Image 1 (cartoon, rainbow, N blue to C red):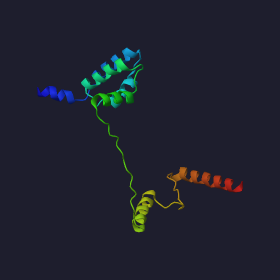
Image 2: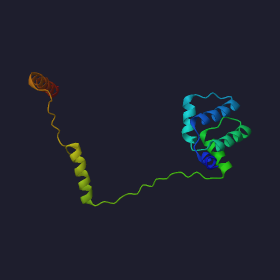
Image 3: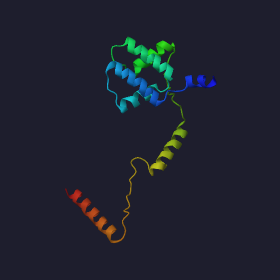
Length: 148
């Protein structure tokens, strides 16, 4: 008896979900592909098999077109008489002192190896003859740019 109660609250398996969605698709002559099944499963996998089965039977009897996820959830809400809560995140500005702001920016500048506008010195990683050739080409390129 305890197992029955546990089973009613379990999420639906993808296999069972695919079977029920195929039933719905057959009723509306829709073609299902793996991507569509996965998309619907991603949004509806919190429903139990029993609840989803009742919802799908209701949709087959009441709807004219293949439902979207939102329509399935609306019918589930109507049948279950529940409200879905939308997660709301509130952004609250944190007031910081100028000293705290300076510390934060100092940490950022430290990570970036300098402040904005600081002259960045690029050191060649090439050594020996290749490094010298690179530096010579770089010097000549700078001269050409200045000469233009």
